[in-house]
Amino acid sequence: MAPPGRPEPRGAVRGPVATAAAPAMPVRPRVGPGRSWVAPAPRRVARSPLPGGPQPAPRPPRVDARRLAAERLPHRWFADQLVLTLSGRRPVHALLGHALPAAYDRLAELAPQAPLRPTGPYRRAPEPRVRDCGVYSPRRGVIEAFARVAAGERVRALAFRLERGDDARWRCAALDIGPSTAVWTRTT
Image 1 (cartoon, rainbow, N blue to C red):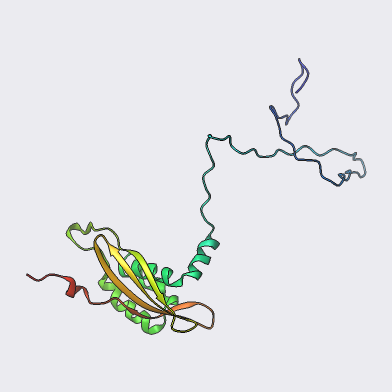
Image 2: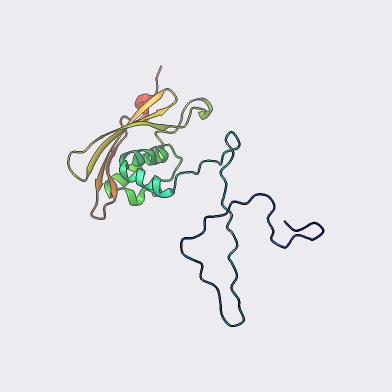
């Protein structure tokens, strides 16, 4: 604070300022031609919010964390992608690099029919979602999985096989969605 009657110097901070502890090593003076030593300005330390006051919003998980989770559960990631594709919310070519040719052909055959698209009056049924996944590994580098897909009260099954390639990426080798939608419709 400036003495009474004098203006405050530029950059002055009002109120209490927490300063960082002095470094263990002495600060090297900044000297040179025409320069004299200047003491470094004290650093402000961020204070935590008061208890009971507004708290900072939690940060969303990093993309790396999501990618690691997907690598640990490739069957869950692929089940979600299949549901998006077979319900018409994602184009088939989004899975082009994630499926072997035979499985991609089967997916391209099923996708235009959108067998998991909500049906009913005005299509107001909830969007399909993966309820849970089961997994079996017959040998290293192979996963055979199934997913229960729920859309409202209706539950469908989805089965697929993932194989790990030489580049350590999982790709779908086979896909089955069960009976066609014609079996599920009533004829009275």
